[in-house]
Amino acid sequence: MRRFLLLRGCEFLVLAGLAAVPLAVRNPYALGLLTLLAIYGVLLIGLDVSVGYLGQINLGQVAFLGIGAYTAGLLVTRLHWGLVPSLAAAAGSGLAVGGLLALPALRLEGPQFALATLSFSALTATALNELEALTGGAQGLSLTRPPLFGLALEPRGFYWLCLAALALVWVTMRNLLGSHWGRAFEALRDSPIATDAMGVGSYRHKVAGFALGSGLGAFAGGLYAFNFQYLQPQIFTYDLMVILLLGVVLGGRKSLWGAFLGACIVVLLPNLLSSRRLFLTLAMAAFAAALAAGIRTLAARRAGPFQALAPIAATGLLAAGGLLVKHTEDWRKAIFALLLFAVMVGLPEGLMGFCARFLTGIFRVPPAALPPPAPLDDALPVRAAAPGALLEITELRRHFGGVKAVDGITLAVEAGTIHGLIGPNGSGKSTLVNVVSGLYQPSSGRILLRGARVRGAGLMPMARAGVARTFQNLQLFSDLSALDNVMVALNGVFRLPLPLVIAGLGLGEERRAQADALALLAFVGLEAQARAKARDLPYGAQRFLELARALARRPALLILDEPAAGLAHPDVLRLIGIIRAVHQRGITILLIEHHMDVVGELCHQVTVMDGGRLLAEGTPAAVKRDPLVLEAYLGAP
Image (tube, rainbow, N blue to C red; front, side, top):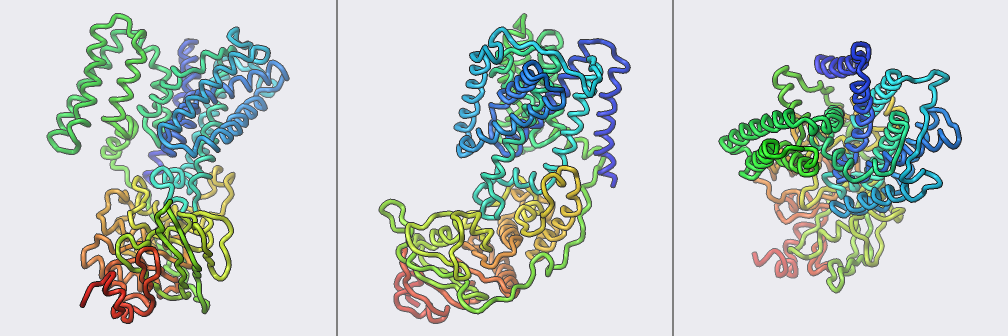
């Protein structure tokens, strides 16, 4: 409760303070800056969805600002629409165009995606400039701000409208990003493969997130048009995009407060550069802070020399430039570049991330209370295994060019059993389970689950059909906590439609999901580490966390790809106990493992592969005595 009151109290105080400013300050210029702050707040919250949550370098947000601005402006000037319908249409245009752009662009990653969005921004600016009959081209488009429900909006009234819009976007995005949608956005940034394997769908969520951010950008564009009442294409160019990106990174990614702080920076930066004395003062302060932080970092050995020294060099150049350059506005691109470099290296979590850690320590803000773990029968119900084969593989092949990684494998995994899959390195075991789980498509052959083909191809259809898996190389969501890793994968818990989630009605579901996830963490012995980041857990704990996440799918078939790899002997014994407990709950297990004591202890049936082919099959005891297995894999006794 204390945490809730502190956080919501801060939000209310900031909003109330901003709303009260026009009552005390009559300066039109100051009011204009505050209005722009509210508009850029909406814009950067949208940009943070793709940059912070999806982890993509999005250079197209300025284009959506322009699309929304011209959509609203043209609807008012040409069709005489009102203010609210024009703003709704602006947001809709950004949502639609963003979704269409995302469909091809989000199949790209990293620099390729950045170049695609940059090209879209350039194309948009060119189109707005060349379509003179529609947009007015370089001559610009003049418009008059329409009344709101018959009430004319003077600058102060329009500022309050923009502030109300920011508050509405803030609340809805807080509800959305704090739900399973927000966790999915973060998860796919860390591991799209694992996101699909958990039945979440990385591509679908990427498109939805990018379209949402684009819609917010276009909505901000509509407000921008009604604020300035004059538009020109050269406003929406690369220079503004760099400033917006700087605002998100400097303010702090994955944070509404970071987006708000970034908006303050974007609005105040031109004024900062126009005053050489003010710029020099802040540059010297930044240099002193970077120097002190760098010395502490090197002394404590918390990071390498580059991370400690690079921000010092960048801020030192800013301070030296402030002393040597008379007109700092002429060097703004270099200043932006140095600021961006210094923050990304020295403060990757941004100013708000640093402030949050600092203030949490001062005020001793407790983490949100967690519910007690749910009964295990609720989180992982016992399955009644039907007789017969659960998984049937017939003449399965997977070729990579001339390499026959899987070459004509036929096997059946009986329901309610633990089926071992062993063989020397390179025998095709992992390739086989990658094909079964949908990561790879088979070159030929047939896979049946419960006697029927799974509709669709890929990880998602197989996950939704009841197949869950762990990975030979860990595929955890490293920036999420152990609890959130499991909650991402929960099956059958989140049923509320998106509008109700945005309205803040999903808190009950969240609590139930937390209780189920805690039950699964307790099942694998990680309940005490529920709040720890996945990347901070010991290796053995990470292995158990991946198993708990797979169990969150409530699978019919659980594929374990070398779960004991790298574990110490006590952890191996613990793993055997957990797998046996999983099997007792009626879950069929396909186990790939090199530890023969684990295989012999757990498996009812074992299949041996070599060179992509089936070498032997039988009980663990029979396989261990097979001459072919001894020669190819186990060696002479």
